[in-house]
Length: 488
Image (cartoon, rainbow, N blue to C red):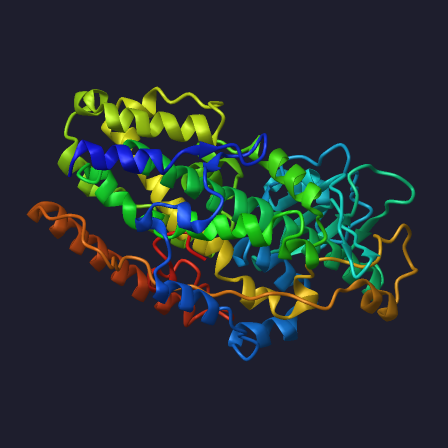
């Protein structure tokens, strides 16, 4: 592998500012300008077209259709649905969400103030959606709320919503809806939350935190680590097709006249604003599942399968300790140093301090695990369930055609029907841990890769066994159902 080859790869993998305040992307206007090894093959192009299929007859879709109105299922989705990234432990109520003991009726005749002290209340705050400009679909203005949602962990360990405020600023025309309100008042409030969650999930949890960051990881890899570098061999599987899919997304999905604006509440300008706000809050720790779960106070919440399966997938790669046995070896590896520096410079705007990451074996292992987890498991968690939970449109409305209600007691079934949109989209994905190209040739790394695959197979069987005991299986972090990379 010659230095000239690496120079050519660097020149074809330059950086470009995509939007101010967002991670940078590869400098390319068309897929033909991408390095050949990151382009879709003919087979992948055909798969990408054929895999956009409906799963309306699947067990998930039928279950969602039957249970979408229920408070317990509504709460379940914030732990194990397509966006488990918003909910957090509520130690005290935000000042702009003045829920009182008198307002809410909690199961077991418990008081809100007491349940907060006991650690049984949880919160979702969609403040980043406040003021986001909305789109026009078929010449009709669309609506997007910026709600706050309060959840109660019931005595039987279910998570149920008890209060919803649809706008950020308390006001007479911004009532706090509670679970004891009329059927359609409460249902419409939950529908506005689900629509807000769709936009937050698509643009922050999915696009920004997996697709755009995975592109940063990929370009940094191509520019700084030659093919003979052990980290290149380990990570190249997890960058497969990411640049190609992202370039297509920027051109066809999230551009000014992209497909997303034809069915989503957020306009092109609104999408950018939301992602800029979200990106300012992205930290290295927030991409490490164990740190993130701890920061959100969710270590002990029951029936949280994203956390439980994710922790098992967050496994340190023993391959790195084969190549790096001492901290000094990391400090001397200038290519590795530039790789890490490049990610923080172009992905985080150099907001984060990288000193420790570049100086110890343990920190390097954690950093590389974060890269792999983001590109594979995290993307699967926020992508692969979209069809399951979204194919029954009222459960995940992409946009809404009426503004949030300004008073209680006015919502009817007809109001709900007039508010809902009429379209949604579906996606599916395939297997983690099976690499179509072999990059490691040494005996020890090859053996460690085989052991890693065996551990994934064991985890897959464990998840299958647990799912047999659940009303609804959690399958998004099953290794056999995950892609290695952000490629769909």
